[in-house]
Length: 248
Image (cartoon, rainbow, N blue to C red; front, side, top):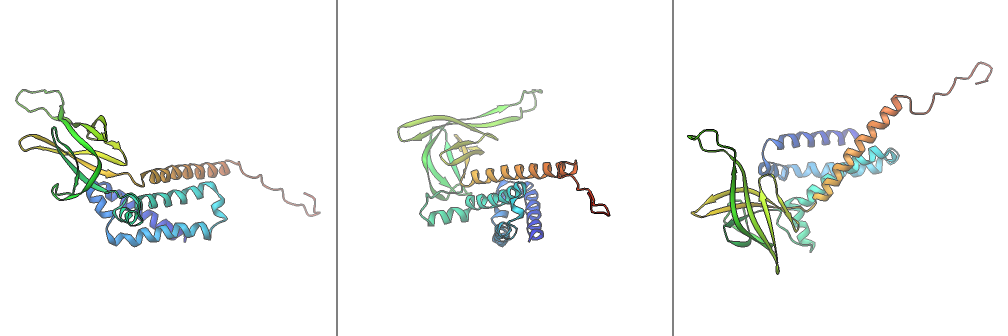
């Protein structure tokens, strides 16, 4: 069982490395692909079985933390997936759209979420977002005959919830977290007025995933520390051998 779990974990590591080269959207499609569902199920059941079959070994805090961390990462990732959101909706929990887009023209207030085509509506965000101004920052221009390179894209927005209005900003690599969603600056355009496209991603399950990574780091540190302590002679001292007469 341990070797089986280890093989699945290394397989997960390989998929994570491959996904890092695919980009966010293609990696999402890869990890949510139906052929991988049995892998996630087997790995989750294997980790749960480890707590039952090796209860004595799980008394070691480092080993228990490693197993629990992997289990939390899997459970949190499932919670954040399309299937997890669909299951939560069927159970009567607050329905959220896991992955959608918000298209805003300057001065426009909207909460309509759309699919990847930016045309098909998926639902409502639950609070309004108004694009006050879309802007770009440029690197210093070194040559007059060359257009300056764009340094940053940013959307100055106002968040509307009831009578409350909160100003905020979304820029590349600086998402905005509000009411269970992360808003990312993903695209922009003109038709002819400037408009901004924000990726809206649910944060369901992310706290569980972060807790799993904390446990993984803690478990790895404890295991490394205990092994080093035993290697350096920090464990039990060796017992003296008995003499032929029976005296120690």
